Amino acid sequence: MASKTYPTFHICGKYDGSIPVIRWLNKLHGVLRPHYPQVTAEVFFEVISILFVGEAGEAWEWLDFSPKFIEFIDKEKEPNAKDIEEFKHAVTKKFPRKKAENDTGNIQEDIQNLQQDPNESLNSYHERTQELLRRSNGRDDEGYENAQLTIPEKMILSIIIKSFIRAIRDHEVRTINLTKSTILSGSLKGAFERTKKAITTILQREEIERERIEQMELEHFRSQYLKEWCRPLGVSLAMRDQGQNRLLSKIQNFYENERNSWQIRYQSQPGNQCYYFSSKGAQMKIKEYQEGDRYLRSNKIQSEIISYKGCNGVHHRETKEM
Image 1 (spheres, rainbow, N blue to C red):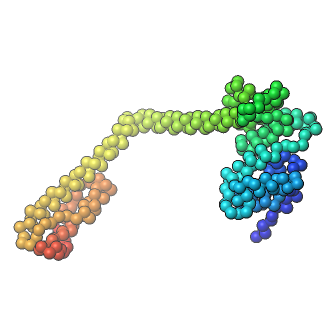
Image 2: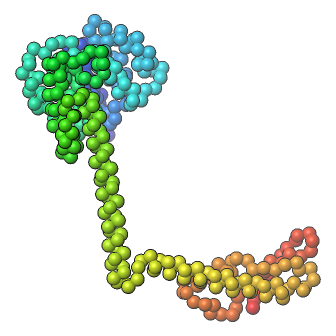
Image 3: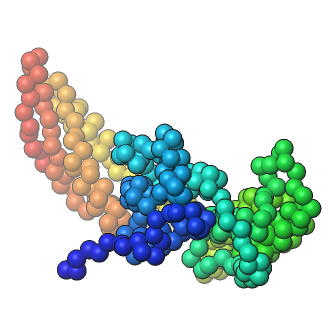
């Protein structure tokens, strides 16, 4: 059995502010993933407590004054997957890109080559696009009510949104988005929300189509049954149910008559208050009818007779044969 290996973190290193924090977090996940089947929240925050130092301790200072996250670092409270996402969102806002990108050509190339990876979730793809928007010295229109976007910022945002939509992996989702003329003039977050709605719409359509096909198959089966047996399937099912009901009714009537006969025969005997058939014999005959669909083949009926004698409730069993 191979021994468990642990990450060395030499690829991501400590967070020192030299790269955007979201990029560092992506590298961190890349380091952890080969060593853990699932990166749990407990493992994530334990690594953060070791590697998250920031510039001159600024990151740790921010973390120390964040009551919710410091509880996870100090292991006072157990985190979950939702807490990881909240941490990423908060730390990205606190530590946006600080160093200017001097190589404008690289940004343009990244925008042109933006593409959702085969196994990448929509949320992760949206986060990467947000990072690309920040690197382009742009910002999203939504969430900045008191700071209207400048013309250059609007142009950058429009380019990023267009790249985001056109690079979505699913062709059908991409087509639905591009048919909406207003999506390119809104916000990146709005485009993200519309994309999620498009995915939901497609799933609903697929469910409706699946139900339609199942209904068509059922109708085809009904048609073939009618052609083969010259009567509708529903009528055959009803006749089967009615036949079973008639059979059970005959059996119940037979044993009701037999019970009455035994009561008349034995009620006159002293000390006997009542006689009746147990259900065991009836169940045996019902099973015989259901298996062979025949009437009684013998006049011998083995029945259990329960005789209650006296007022004290003492009873005994007798077996009678007709």
